[in-house]
Image (cartoon, rainbow, N blue to C red; front, side, top):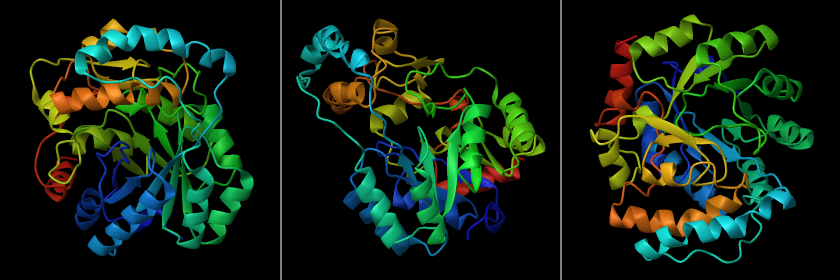
Length: 341
């Protein structure tokens, strides 16, 4: 079974759902001695399997697949969707987008994804937003798949350890994109990554992958010195040649127009960090804690904003170290990061 010791460089490219993570990015980071994961979030099981096949054509090195763990939303919370839909209508009309009046249930095609990964195993499966059932974890372990849980607190780390996870991706508040809390409504912790690493290490004896706000050599060194077995970087790869990052997102990451990041639920209902723009400011504190329902509600608006290059209305996920992101081949980015440690 795969372990972190099988990776030449302790640098992992984070799985970034929504298109940024590609088979080409995973293969390029692997070629440099690191490790990458495909993002199966928002994809069907069939689409996930297609990406796995594409990655295998590009590399014979180990890689992972990240799953979003589905959870049922509280009906009382869902009652707030109509009001938020009305608040968003002016944005949608300006962009020529039509907001859905009805949002169907979405379980992330979970059962089919688990079945596919059991029938055609990959070296590593990681989880975001929760944990698999004991039976699912046991079945994946039986086919030789190492499993990694994303955790944001000591309580989540203990639950993952009890389930038999192989390692933990400890995600600090500095991370770009969604905070991987196991509860949609949970207020994400604010302990800095290095503090959270120390707390988790004291509570759980599993290998730790440090994630969140790591964008350069000194930050990598600090995490490894703090006891992490490896580091996971997402924002650092958003400008990579092989990343599927949208053009507007790429431009915003390099633009002096954006000077800070902010945590918001406005785009998806889950707490997520991105470049602070007018959409975040305009809708701060207004979205119900309903995921993935808010994600589906705003999807047409976000797609229209991306097509129009309207960076003030796009979800520009980025961690606090976004200024460290550099363009270029992912293999060179990986090598440069390691040389700077």
